[in-house]
Image 1 (cartoon, rainbow, N blue to C red):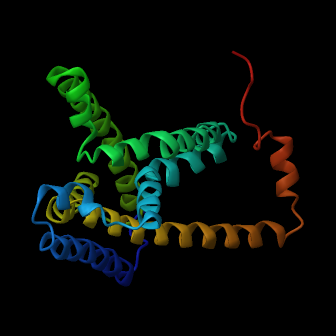
Image 2: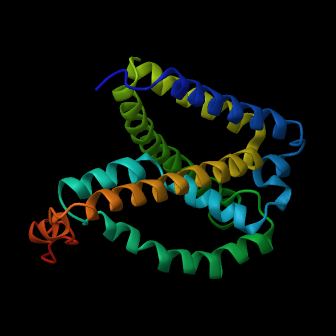
Length: 227
């Protein structure tokens, strides 16, 4: 499965990368202080921040790997998503109001005030290690998908995506990240709705009993309840 993308599709991908870089350059001119760079001067609308968080945590793992795993086995990966609503409620009810009240630029500043410099260093280093591993998987999955449709080297695609992301993030700071995430959220949601509609039409337009066969094969199971 290589080389199936038309030249216009590849042009759209490059145009998308150019838009990301352009947004980074635009917000670079607005980021003059550390507060503007780190927290966008606290001027981001709530709906945009919410979409940005959703986009940031809906990675290629959620968009590609989880549906693939569910198709291959069952709905067991959905259990992880069921933990999100109660945690989101606690964070938005108690953590975020306190964080905004203290007017801190970074949560690591809070850790240093409570636990000292070593607490801050430990938390920051642990988070960096976690994100390195997570981003490595995300880049690999998205690049693996693109390499299936494009005659490009896998490593080159990983480097290309990584460099583009680093540049617009470092240029524009949090404001650039949030508004590019809003754009990406719209693209992802439209893509999901299109796929859901197209697949639903394909499944229900033929009397081949795919849904019943899926039930019989326990495809909609959340996995075993055994310890």
